[in-house]
Amino acid sequence: MKQAGYLTSWCNANPKSAPFNWRMLGFRQQPTDFYTRPYYMAVKKTKSKVANCVGGRTKSKVWLDYFRDIFLMYPHQRKFLFQFITDFSHDDNNLMTLMDADIKDVIQFLHEGNYLNNTLLILMGDHGARYANYRYTYSGKMEERLPYFGFLFPPWFEKKYPQAIKNLRTNTQRLTTPFDLYETFKDFFHFDGAGIGDISRRGISLFKEIPLSRSCKDADIAPHWCTCLDWREVSQDDPKTRKALQAALDTINGYTAPYRDDCYLLSVHTVARASKLKAGDAFLKFRKTDHDGGIYKISMSNTKQSHIIYYQIVFTTTPGMASFEVTIMYSTNTKKFTFYLLPLSIYNLTRRSCAPTTITYDAIKLIGSVGFKADDWLTGPFSLSAVLNFLRYGLRRLERARTA
Image 1: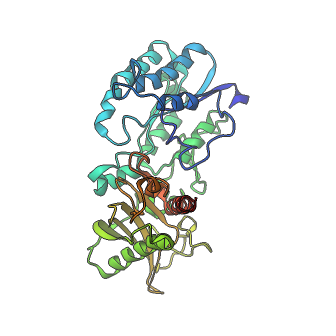
Image 2: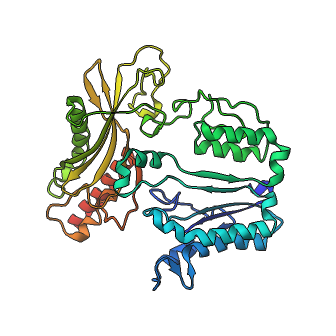
Image 3: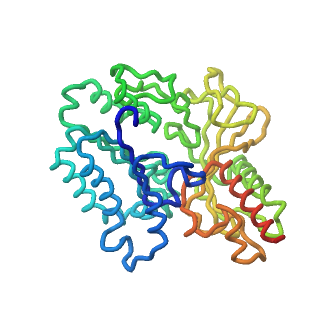
């Protein structure tokens, strides 16, 4: 972007859970022209007497003022500004209203300064409301998988590119992913026309019409996260559902087995929801997995009736009352359940899934992401591989702490 003359900014108001830092190592060098991480790391060390404020301003105003000030300092230079905040929306829908006035003020500033005449403004989330008991509902499941995206174009843009905007409106009713947004950004550097999108590509510009036939398989969306599939609720007493649940529980307990003196053997406390998807229906046709059994590389192009059934189960374990959502494959040919490293979510982690036996509180904080206090770790979706890597890392730290 610098080669195209753009100023760049990456402003995340929560350095602990920031993309590129949450479960990652961050950047070796400052990634953008403007980078707020040092500032917010310093802010986190201070304590405000008023909740959701930094000094005499709300956290959202501080965050949005940084965005506004770049426009004031560089009114005529191209800009790519990426802002991210979770303080008001991540765990409570009601707090979002505290941002209303600040958002209104910054949009009014952009409008009155005529900045919106050459700016694409995007308001987006990384997921919807997926916390507390609401997450156990069908709507909560959809919220986790369907984040909001809103686009505000300059008034002249539709007149100059009517087909592109027409396609964008059509695509609000089509299967889209953030990879499509990336392809859309690329069109601002080299626009190769509207037309029809190619579903063989993982990402399709939103200025192209995304075919109605696009499937999760085309977009490389794993069944666990696909909202187009026909999941059917099944009884929790269904024998195969119970076996699928046991397979998930055995896998989780298997990873803490070497540390049984420190971690209780978990058992199922409650099952909130169980559903089943038969992959042989017209939409999802199973053919094979890769050698690692990874669900992300499953081929679904076979036209023959599939022998794979997916089970998706939401449950809590005791002791610790941790909540899990798992997807498991069952083969009607081999009569076996296969857990593999399928996607798994942990949300509302109010207690510990590696429930301690006799270790101290300080040692508990060393266990890893699935062993931290709720206020130490934000809730969110994790792949099972990430959860297990966290657990392995934490248990290694615990082992070193015990022998130190």
